[in-house]
Length: 125
Image 1 (cartoon, rainbow, N blue to C red):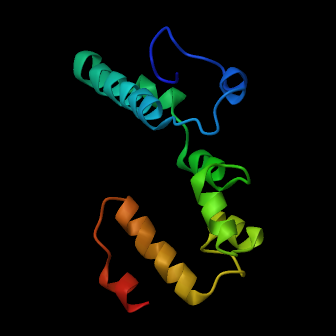
Image 2 (image 1 turned 90 degrees about the vertical axis):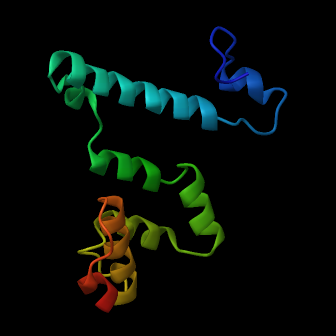
C-alpha cells in the first residue's frame, strides 16, 4: 500500500507479491505538499526560504533523462531512439547529434514550459 499514511511498505516488501507499484497519487500529494508549504511561507512570512531546498531545473532534467529514470527513458529507447540522442536533449542548443528540426521542437517545448505560447520565430523554424 503506497501513499496511505501509517500503512506504507518498502519496495522490497511489495516486490515479493506485486508486479507493478503505482506512485502517481502519492507523488502528486508530496509535490502539492511542497507547493502549499512554499505558498504558505510567502503568504504568512513574506519569505522565500523554500528556494534554498528546491531542486534546480537542470537537476530535475538530469534526473528524468538518466538511464533508468521512469517513463520517458523507457518510451524513447523502446521507440528505437539511441541513448546518446536522448542524453543530447540535456544540452540541446549545443548538441551536434540533434537536427535543426529536433532543435525547433525542443525550443517550442521550452517556450511552452516557460508558460508562454510558441513564438513566431519558433513556428518559422
